[in-house]
Length: 210
Length: 210
DNA sequence: GGGTTTCTATACCAATCGGTATTGAAATAG
DNA sequence: CTATTTCAATACCGATTGGTATAGAAACCC
Image 1: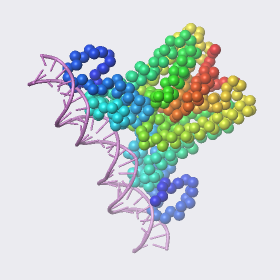
Image 2: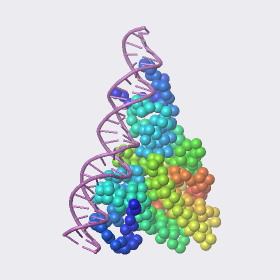
Image 3: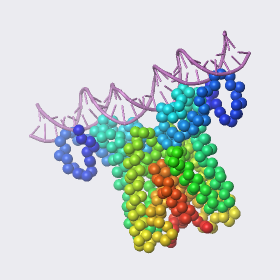
Image 4: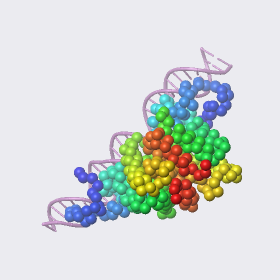
C-alpha cells in the first residue's frame, strides 16, 4: 500500500502500467487548496473537497492518501505558488525594501479578487478541535520557518548597517511577521483592498530608518 | 418556551417558584468561555463544554438555549471581563498612551499563564464551516465595533493636535488594531511572554510622535 | 403533608464526520 | 484477443456532531 504518488517531480517518469487516472491531480489539488484556504482544515469537509475537486471520495484517497496528507500537499502548493513573494522579498537590497515587498506581496495575495481572502497559514492554524492539533502544529512550524528567514535577513541587514541602532533585528522581524499575521486576520474578515492598501502605507510610514 | 434566563441582572428578583438550579450559571459560563477561548466555536464540542462546565447536556440547553447562544453569552462575558482594558485604554490622555495601554492590556490578556492564549475575538472568527458563518460575522462585527471606538478616539486626538500631521487617525487606528490581531495569532501559536513583551516595546518604539 | 414545578440523568435522535469495502467497467501490455 | 491493472461509482462503516424526549428525584409553595 503506497500513498499519494508525486505527480509533478518525476514528470511522466512512471511506465503507466494500468488504466491512467482520468483527472488532473494538479488541478484537483488547486481546487482543494481553495477550499482549505477559505474554510480552514477542519472547516473543509470531504464533501466540500470532493465537490470542488470534481472527483469521488475513493479517488481522493487513492490519489492523496487522506485528508491530512491532502492538506499538506495543498500547503506545499500554497507556499510554492502564493508565497513565492516571500523569497523574492528577502533578496531586496535593504531591510526597508524587504519589508515593503513583504507587505505589498501579502496585500496582493490576501486580497485578490479571484481567490479566498486571508492566509492559509493563519486560517489553518487557529480554532481547531483536538484531532487537528498535529495539523495546527505543522502550520505553526511553517510560519516559524518563514519568520526565521526574515530574522536572518534582518540580522544580515544589521551587520550591513542597514538598520537603525535602536532596534534589534529579531525584534523587528517578529514585529513585521506579527503585522503580516494581523493583515491575514483583517483580510479574512473582509477588509477592503483600499483599506488594506492604506494599511501598507501606514506600516511603511512607521518603519524605522529611511 | 423561553430561552436563557438572565442570572445576574435582576439579582434575586425571580420569585423562585420551582426547584432551584443546582449549578452556578456564571461559573458554568466562565468554564464554557475557557473552552471556546482555546478551541474556537466549532472546535468546542458539546462534550467538551458540558464536561468543563460540570453539567449535563439538557441542563446546558435549559440554561443557555443552544450552543450559539452560549457562545454569545461567553463572548459577552469575555468582553466584559477580559476586554475591560480597552475601554480604560481609550480614556488615556494621549494617543500614544492609548496605544500603550492597548498593547500592554492585550499582552496581559492574551499571554496569561492561567488562561487560554490568544483572543476569543480572533480565534472565534476564522476557519469555520458554513453553519458557523453567522457566529463568525457576529465576532467580526464586534471586532469592528472596538476598532471604530479606537478610530473615534484617534480622531479626537487629531483634533487635539495629539497626532503628527503625517498620519491619519483612521489609518493609525486600523494599523493598531491590525497589530493587535497579529498579537492574537502569535499568542495563539504559543509565543513566549518575553517575546510578546519585546514585541510591545518594538511597537511602541515605532509609534509615531513622542 | 399534598401538589406542582423544575431539576438532573439516561438514553436516544437524525445528520454528518472521515474513511473503506465492493463492484464493474475501462484502458493498458502482451 | 486474453490477462492484468487501476480506474470511478455506490453503498456502507463506526464514531461523533448538535440537539431532545423521557423519566425519576428533589425542592419549592401552600
